Image 1: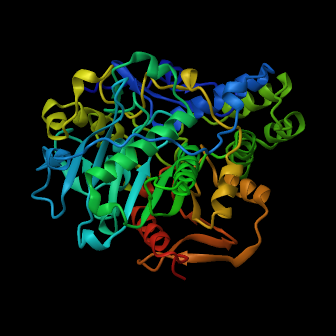
Image 2: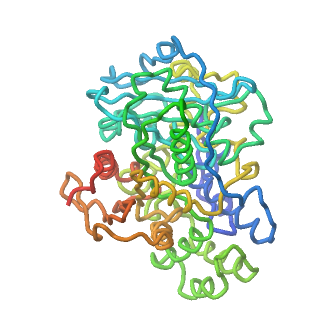
Image 3: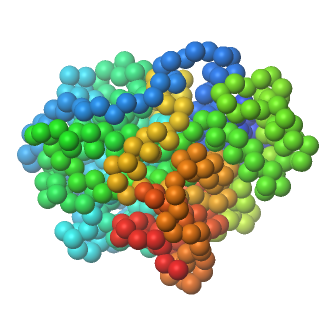
Length: 503
């Protein structure tokens, strides 16, 4: 898959920067197409939500709350499918892996032919004693397999688009890691019924993910009673609480499959429409990205209560226009100017290659890679991409305005609940999570303090509330494990152990 060179011209800037009502939408455009990444997709979603509110539409489909009800789930025979899903070796893999890996499909609706793709990397050491962890990327409509290869999986794709390197801070160092591409239409997941793609939203995504889990556990029965955790980021702030509450609701039903859910952890979570927009504007100001006058105009004209006047939209657009061409994931990182020449990255922050998305897309569209992963490319409507072109904010049917009631549900269920924030992300900034915590109004059990990673550097800050832990990760953008892999692994290990990160 060729990736063309992009010149630095004024026309390029107009291609990259797209004004949005809420916050600036970035999509790095190449001559032969574009990759819409998780940040760009979330900004697109946030913008579409504000546009609905701007026009004062009583859109009950988009604004309704998800109610966690018991789900009737069909469990299908899984005999022999685990062995068929075994991945002997990925093309370009750096030697034999010391862990088993699997990939394949679980059918969640046999009538419509809806099948969800997964990739599973068992723990590198003693997998029988390690917990099972599900990772969900956000979007909506973005791939968790992409998250594996960009953030926490055992391998990264090199700039040649063909070979892999080892991730020394992979999360399967401490857990058995399961990555789910959800909903159907994302990554390698698909449906044989096209109308399924136009009837996707938070509720159906939670239902299908639950159906996936109970059938996957039939396929891998050794994990049925294992401690189970759900982690993820971004729009995972919707996916994770709703799936967790669905599991908890179904666990209460007699004769229903019991999933041994112990906790959830969400990074840079998108939790509340209005809070996120207000927090982003405040983040811009406190990080010297917009002028005092622009921030004052936003404060004067915007109430952030679900109604956005013309004067408010003008003020927000003025803020967006002052940002310039930056990476909204990480406000101090470089953007990808030339994915075919990694030498022209101009000092990428934290040695993170901003062109990595392009290497991953090229690698996962190689026929030999798709064969190794058992991907059914005949069922796909599009090549593999980081975020789906057919599951978009335009056809997303339901999403609560606020996920805080669902978070409160988890706390009330005494489920270990963690929120963490990279502190240089402007997409779902740390201020957004802090404002959401103010709304929850939880009593403090452990006072705010610094925490340290194993390199004796401050990894961030942490506070323990009654029923919830909040931690920051210092020097990290939207995708915490990408920008601060060592600190992310320390934080993740502490979460699994049920204790605050080390002092």
